[in-house]
Amino acid sequence: MPKPFKKNQKRYNKGPVAPKLAGNVLVFFLVFMLLVALYTVLSGGAKKSDVVSLSLVASQVSDGNVKSIDVSGDKLSITLSDGTLETSKKETESGLSETLSRYGVSPDLLKKVDVSVASESSASFWLLTILPIALPIVFIILFFWFVARQVRGAGVQALSFGQSKAKITDPSDKNNKVTFKDVAGNKEAKIELTEIVDFLRNPKKFLDIGARIPKGVMLTGAPGTGKTLLARAVAGEANVPFFHLSGSEFVEMFVGVGASRVRDLFQMAKRAAPAIVFIDEIDAVGRVRGGGMGGGNDEREQTLNQILVEMDGFEPNEKVIVMAATNRGDVLDPALLRPGRFDRRVMLDLPDRADREEILNIHSREKPFAEDVNLKVIAERTPGFSGADLYSLMNEGAILAAREDRKKVSQFDLIRSIEKVMLGPERKSHLLSLEEKRIVAYHEAGHAIVGSVLPESDPVHKVSIVSRGRAGGYTLSLPLEEKRLESRQSFYDDLAGLFGGYVAEKMVIGDITTGPSNDLQVATNLARAMVTRWGMSDAIGPVALENDGGRLIGGGMPVEHGYSENMSKEIDAEVKRILEEARTRAEETLTKHRSALDAVANKLIEVETLEQPEYEEIIKMHGIVPKKKG
Image 1 (cartoon, rainbow, N blue to C red):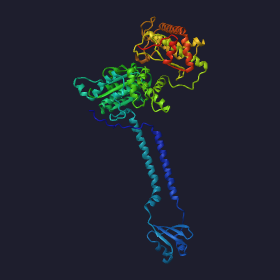
Image 2: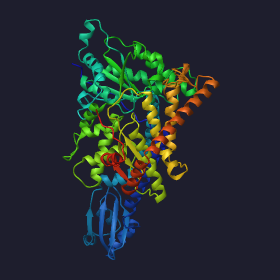
Image 3: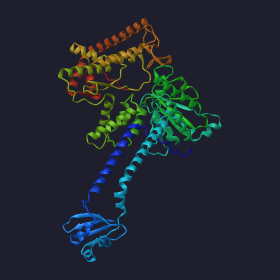
Image 4: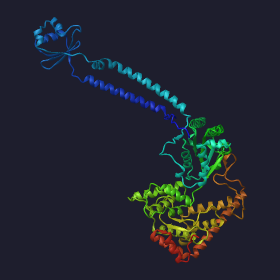
């Protein structure tokens, strides 16, 4: 069993010292002024009295003008018959009667005066005598002590500047604990990671047979596929501490800070072993070295070097596993991926239909559903969605239901949330003129008709001219079955479908608008990829002239291309030929099925949105057979 994890990592406030010091000095000054004002009020609140000589007091007693005398130590407070207050002092060692008798006051006259004797309280003595002197001294001492403490705190913060900022999840924290039950899909990835869990639980089984568990596991996949969630699930299954931080948290403007934080992180993990260290977005510090991209690059390279050294320093029985995640595995330094460091790479793909249904079931645990909800249908209508997209879909569905004051989430809410996640919210305030509405209707009808006629295109599930996000309208096409490989013919049909809106506008209004701008960008990029990346051009041949993503060449320096100007001209000519061929196919298709185009467009102008059954009824009336599964 792993030993319990102790939370003994000290955290310091990394805020600036100077503003704090100035603020605290201001508070001290205000408190001091408040106390001075309070003392002034208390000391000046009593009625002012005249100070008279003792002989005058004796004379007033003899004349019968004194009503009362209050004796407090050597102080006399005299109240005359008319209410006037006077003060005087007597000798400390003698009493009042003895003192006044020396001035000729008989005891009988003194008996007519109300005399009261009170001992002086220690509180008033401290308040009126000692406090005015002691209070400023105390404040000066406190002020200098506080300033010294702040300066010492600045030194502590400077020393803690290189400490790790890792967030630590205690294995006993039930609220944040994640296990494999909370992760749907990624079956192969979970099988790979189960060995890591077994090693952390029982390393002796592996060490006895001479096996060494991988020191590092690199999780690679598209954004939202669950890399961080899987790493947390490994820690939850193994019931070990989980140190989590981002690659960017290592890097500061000061060279050496990142390396210091790496050392501190691995020291913390070794003390808490068995443990898991998870570095998210490791490409922030793990890119190919030697680019020479400025001063900050030195700090990044030093941080990467320290990570490499720390991973090499692990012994087989350290029981610390380093996990990392990235969306860009192609830009990582080869030294990170060599055996002995991140020598196990786990690929996370986008979920298929069955996996999407499992993910939807997990995200629906705490949501009340209406009777009509069918998550299988939602999974079928969300190809290409990642786990994060599906979470957003379920959350948006619940928000839509709550916005309409309903207690349960219906199927209609989830259908609407699919389009919201894909395209953005409806822009109901974006009103079109009648002519613009007609143009958009023909544009979307053109996409739909071409997609329904060409054999390799995906069937149309919905056509709408309601604006969403930046789109004036949209045609939703979904595949009959999910495919891992795409053929050249399917790309040709997709290109023709992209030109459907462009051709329909030109046929109907005799002109071209800005509406097809995004369609043309997507079509051009697709045609160029067919030529330069996938070898789908007979003229250019099976040659990969460009790579995916950033096209990085030795040393990490980006370049525009790696071929000659003559080849570039041939590529441009081939891309233009493919696009022109797609436009011609779209024009031929819409010319042949002009009646279906007009019917769909007119219906869209009337109702704005056509679902699959309504759309298929219209095209069947004009001789187009809808695509069906199987």
